Length: 333
Image 1 (cartoon, rainbow, N blue to C red):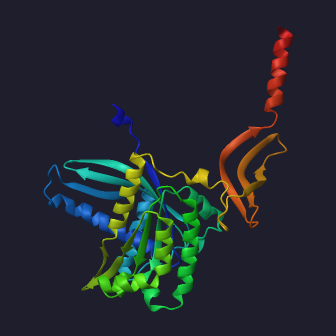
Image 2 (cartoon, rainbow, N blue to C red):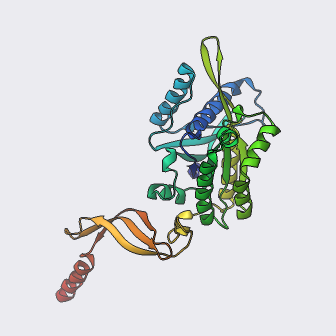
Image 3 (cartoon, rainbow, N blue to C red):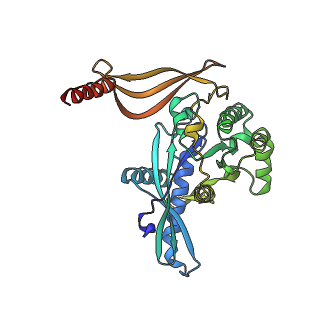
């Protein structure tokens, strides 16, 4: 009976990476790889030990958007342009065993322009504090071949350090995804070139003693006669690893609640010395106050932070109205 009312958990995945680092291409490539696996699954013998995992879009407009991006690649034979606006994708992660399929969990993925992936942005702070895992995207081709990319890597490491200061002593998995690895030498040679160029990042992760895994993504466009195809190699393994870790933490009751831990946390200097400075709302003159946001200021560096609150109604006359009711009742008695 309890299984009938089981509600699968929802995991929010934060993405961190500069503009053009391959976040959208990776998402579309993983989606196409899962869909291809699902289509080929009927050809495999179904036994009691056979398991199949994939994810599906929950909303029609999001599925249409992914299919449109995929069709853009297949028709023109080029990668899609960088993302221009924040888009939420909601996926249902499903498991098929024998002739049955069930939903293991829901995944919410924020696909956003690279310039918004910054903890100075209050909206990105809100996304980070509501997340349970993070995917960090690094352009491996530029990392190895472009000396100017060192500055970009430093910014990514700086933003990652801010997030690491928030997730200390909690289970929060990181997927470090190196994109455009198909433009580098294959195998261990290319991976060693990448590792040599990002030693500071690896050292930062190791010193933080957190759970992370490096992935080398290769999503290529091939052409046969007049048709293009998108070939994604092992991109789905990122989602499989990340969701597996999150689901294990969920079953053990170890999912982090960064919303509580970040209330007094400064995203600029990393201290926990924030003080409430202002409450922002409206309709105060009508006797009601709709609290939408609360503003904090750091005592150490002076940085300000805005906390987005749920929609609530607070009637300042409620206490006086309640006391007047009690007076009337006492008079009647």
